[in-house]
Image 1: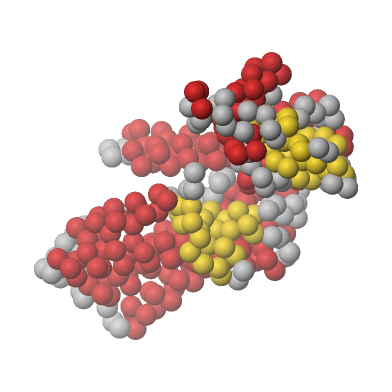
Image 2 (image 1 turned 180 degrees about the horizontal axis):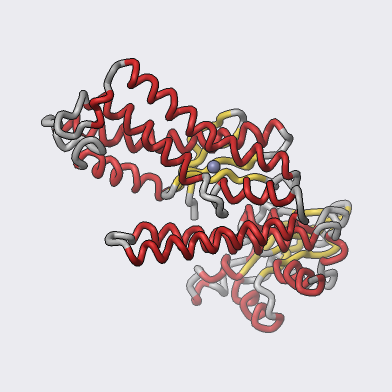
Length: 367
Ligand SMILES: [Zn+2]
């Protein structure tokens, strides 16, 4: 299923919108249109103007998030880190980095670049409003010009983005800043665990506050988000650091079961029951021409499985690696593409396969 689509490229980085985004823009537009001043435009008489302003704020909010992410990307590119893309979704934006720099100084600069952009936008807009002598915008009883209110709101949103992202907890930028500072004094693994623990403690503290104060539901939701983010960052870092130095050839499975392209879906399901593997390389003669997994067959109605051939349902685009590649690379590719196995080729000939299970088993053995 397509969950995001590309709207353009900036600095060579694909900018994508997640489908949840299409839902959130009208909802936010509605909220801003009907909020009372200074956080909305309920005082604007014209229906069209009211909604036009609301939608503008919603769109500019996500533009602010995008600029924040581009701040990170700019520094990442400058230090030679590849960026797969920036995806804007329900809760903001995410930059997919090919790898997070293991150099604390670079990570420090990169993590701070996003919040710096947000702070800069807030400063510029605040100065702009001051120059117009429009301080009374804060005065809710006589709210100023609605268009100026958009400017003030975007400034406000950017200072919130700045503060929120500097919370010293993963997955916020502040968590990365903290790890970078710690990593100057201890191992990267230790620094990650320590920063993750600080994040978890912060989340628990925030959750408790959410339970105490009235209307604290948002605090509890954010606390969950932080707690899970901290655990995941810790886990994935421990795995990638543990795998460091290992090559694909050290962890791959050499004894591979393949299936011929002319096999029917019915026969494939039978084979899956027998061998307990959920995915198989598809071969034609000596050559690998695709990969077929349980996902490809499960949507075909039972009675049709006798007629459907594997070559019709397999994935033809084969993602492959070489035996000499780093094991960590397999993990990254699996995560980014959301796949469970990668074919290993040696001069166009398949010599093995690496699965998620292979990776996890290696990590358990090494720890
Ligand atoms: Zn950020």
